[in-house]
Every structure is written in structure tokens, then in C-alpha cells.
Amino acid sequence: MECNPHPNAPHGFLRQASHDAGRYVCECEWWDEKDYELATLEEAEAFAEKRNYEYTERCPWDEWKPTKDIV
Image (cartoon, rainbow, N blue to C red):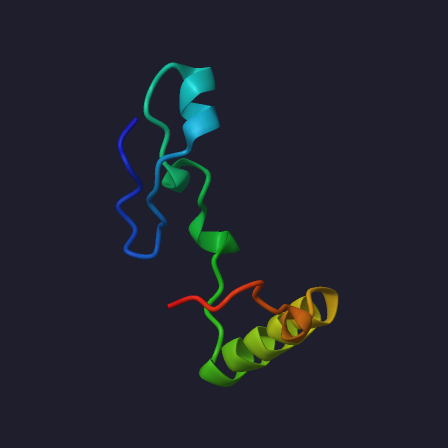
């Protein structure tokens, strides 16, 4: 199968799908232009801020302390 020529199509090796199919499988095989939606810069920043906030609430890295100094 040839890769999707659309400029926004993602490309990358899908290990398990390739193993199951017995050939190289690229991410673009499942990508569809109609499912692709561009966000404004403000929407992308708001999403990143929300995602990062939720992640740090679940994984409070501020509490992590190294056991020894890393030089």
C-alpha cells in the first residue's frame, strides 16, 4: 500500500499492525482528511494548558526528590 500523499497525513511505523499484516504499515493508512481538524493557536494553547494541568494533578512531580545529586 502506498502512503497517503496528503501533506497533513502522519507517517510512522506501526509495529504491531505491521507484524500482524506481515508488511510495513504506516500511520497514514488510517488517517482521513475529514477527521483532521486544525485548531487556532488559542485553542491549541488552551488544550495544552488543560492537558498539562490535568497531568500534573495526577502526577505531582514537585514532590519528587532525587536520592542523590546528579552531576
